[in-house]
Amino acid sequence: MTVYSAKDLTPPERLKRASEFLELGERDLQLIRQTSGIVRSRADHIVGRLYDRLASFPESAELLTQASSVTGEGLERRRDALTNWLGNVVKLVEEGSDWLPEALHTTGATHAGAGKSEVRVPIDLMVLTMALLQDTISAELLRARPGDLDAVSAWTKLLWVAFDVMAAAYDGPLPAGASAT
Image 1 (cartoon, rainbow, N blue to C red):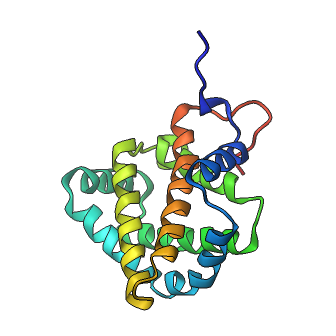
Image 2: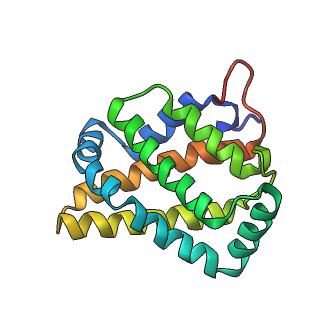
């Protein structure tokens, strides 16, 4: 019996599949573009809340310590990297860039242990981190645009589509002919 597997999809195919499944459509992308300034202007707060939690949760705190000892990069550098990542994802979405799937897959590969730190972040901590990121962005959007559940929904879809592409890196190397630039 053959069972369908998304493992064999390239990052663009995976992004398309997840977008279709979550119904991330053009109206959602318009809402994301309209509200991207809110997320960008609050990125330091969003990332700060996330890293405060990561640093206080024993399992993730241990991983942060381990990664810092391997790379020599401290917590502040990691905060800056996530702030930049969030800004870059928003920019790629705003531009409708074809580079988004590869950028997300590369991020996933880094967290799966293929990056320079060679520290593997367990997938369950990635899920929890994405959930906290989603919660924090949702709170910031609702603070700036009370009652705008459509924008919150659009961002939620985007974050989980992004996570799906990143999680694909945990399945192993890219399919032949794909790149993770």
